[in-house]
Amino acid sequence: MFGRQKKAVVTALGLPEDVFLGEMLLSMTGNASAVVENYRSIVFFSDTVLKLQGKNARMTVTGRGLSIAYYDREQLKVTGQICAVEFESYPEVQR
Image (cartoon, rainbow, N blue to C red; front, side, top):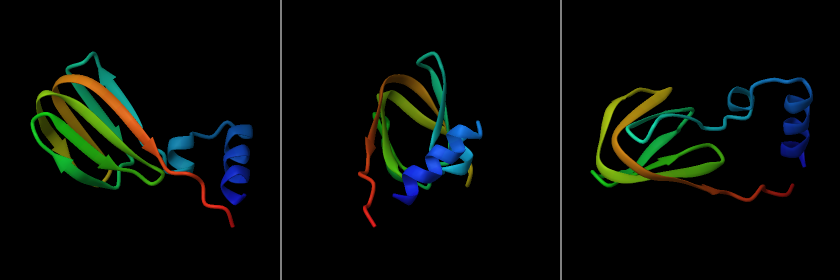
């Protein structure tokens, strides 16, 4: 219940959800590059698949010739031919 209340407050106040709720933020430049902010860890990487763990979801980027241009604690940039981006969300825990 707390998660829904927090989201309602953040939305009502017009605050950025990526910052206050820890959501991943994805910015793409066509299908050639993507920058992901607020990820927690790299789960898997190859030249065709990148899996990132976020606070509330896992993101999978698929494509061809993928490479990580740079990464640090706050953001990661992947380049190559990006074919798809998928999110696997986790159900909210009831307390």
